[in-house]
Image (tube, rainbow, N blue to C red; front, top):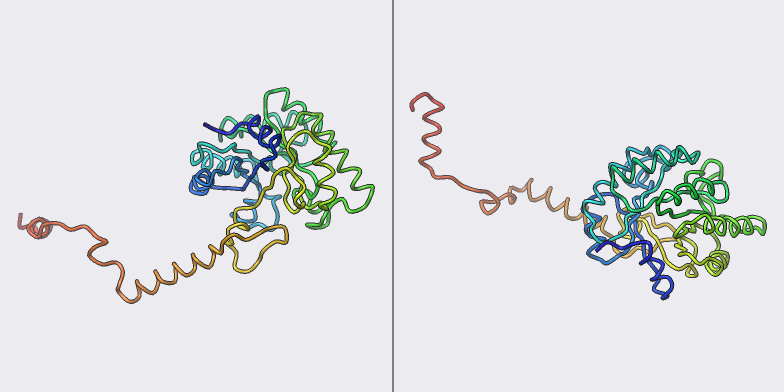
Length: 281
């Protein structure tokens, strides 16, 4: 049975630290389910880690729908949340149409929006329509140009005050959870203390209720790069390169494939086929 937003809140209330990880395709979604992780985020990070863009800004609604469809086909247990991409929720009306498409066409159970007090009318509209909404404050990657890069947010008193106010405004508007990205851990802990809904940190220290990580960072699919906010639990990139190298070498050496990797037919059937081809049949 699929995890619900009520289940996430119950986990938070019990102090169980809800876990979320990104996934972008059928296979990764299956593996997340097997690991017992309760939330999958089909993040617009796919623009960078799957599609090769420098930022998340080029990601379209069609991109998210395409990948979310695969994830919802692969997952039967996790709560699947999809990012609304850049400029797809500029007004409540625009957001309503975007969410209509993403939920009907991809089958996700919730959506995530970046922003604070300025998106409260949009959040309120979606919640009134029955859409579970996750908020996202701190570093908001869709605003990377305005923020002048991927920088920690909220270190100064006024910025910290604004982020606390944003979090409270989002909660009042009806979000079921708030992602806190790249904010000082002291500020993240204070926001978590003030909110009743679940806080999910990434680069925000241990004081949030739960955590989210990007699939590729978590599993070590890059060659060397490990973001400061991530812990690399495997080096699958090295494992994959090693496997591909051995495959290449086996093919070059003629040791793969062998007869055990093929099927066979009766010699007389092959002879008959050749006679037919040669017009002797």
